[in-house]
Image (tube, rainbow over the protein chains, first blue to last red):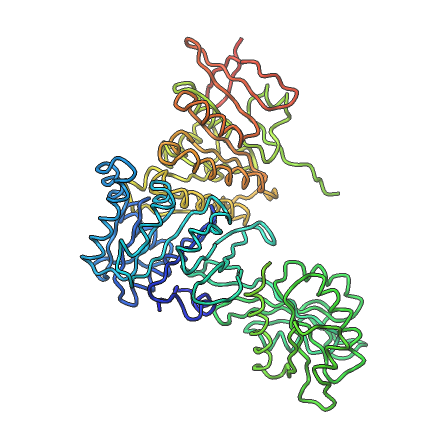
Length: 387
Length: 240
């Protein structure tokens, strides 16, 4: 197993990339996704694997410098088992081979030779230029065991100008064990980057889309907004504060009782290799007008209810209706399980009107483990959800 | 009251600006010209940022320092100019990116070009590009590809068409103004007509004896007559 170098993604893949797999990181034009393959390259070198890197668009020196700029430290070829075929090799091959068929044979011969000489275990390559030079069929044939030892792993980066249609091609589906598409969007936020695991041959999981940030040379999966909402005094502020490393609550002491949230709870946490931001809402009906605005662009929601207060559930039902309209992954956290008079899960489901597809957790927001269980379930839902 | 009217980009050519009021945000313009016809100076004039604007030049022919000098010579403020340089890195591999100067090894590297372009746009949107931000939002950005002709020498037409399709669409999204320089003599009619499909407006330049002429096509209500011109200090001056 080779780590992708992006631990949140390794978890989604069941631990990483199985040896002998063929992987395509497909980049939409302009999306800052070069670190995906480079992270995997660093990880393979770290694991002392011998690597061949095919960079037909650039020279070795320029590549090493680019990688250093992206990652923060340099790959020193003399310290690793690493070989390159670069733009100079491409020019040489094109000059010598001339016609298309001969070009492919020349590439095959070069790759075979290097793989044999250096006992290559992982082959990294930039796909789109070879694809342009050779055409799809011939380019894919370079990735077959005819060219490299059968147990080798192949990782390619591809500038995908053809869109999803390219990744849906039967040849592509047959050729790769992991198809990971890296895209950007102007919605829900400007310059919003996300990746989608479209297909893995070693599991039957659903496709997953997750936003990401590039931080200090690493890809960090990112959940920019989870909304924590629910009726007053259900424990939202406590939930946010206990979930996060940094949390604040804007409360006031008033006629409705002590410490009622009158603006927002806000918290940030780095958890399971995700950066997550939580937004807690006030629960009184007079704030209902702002709830759709807060839910806009959220990736998930936690509905907090007081499991000991039946009278509150009609208010929870109202709030749930607003949340449900946003078509988001939702988890219900029934709080105060440590008190007497706690309702059962079925009763809560019935009163709020939620189906079996929405998880319900009986928790105490005072218990960090309970809070984390809710978040874990929600994050799992978010990473499986097709936005 | 919020003014919802879109930004318009002045060309610096009074006759065009008076007739059009400036080009609408999201315009992509093909500058089609033969060699030795002032095309480059014309492109610099169109790309020169006005007050509150930014300019990004993808240069396949000149180094970043030369591009900056060219802009300075026509009175542009260098703090509002970004260059994606596809020349320098091939001879100086260790050259490092800065906020305003970014480098790709050669024009083959469309992945790198796309990413550097996105980075610059992002930095401009974040308000950290020049250190002297005007506060206009969305920030007006002029983007020039100098030249599409060189890109076509490195990548196939179909590939470049797809790439430029994405770039022109992005420019529209950020409400920018794109200028794409293409040598009209170096490519066949099919190539030129394919690239025209991506554009909103075409400015064509021709040379007759020692005189240069341009015409503008694609603006409703504006005729496509040829205008004799010269360029002095970045000013397009129409002749009789």
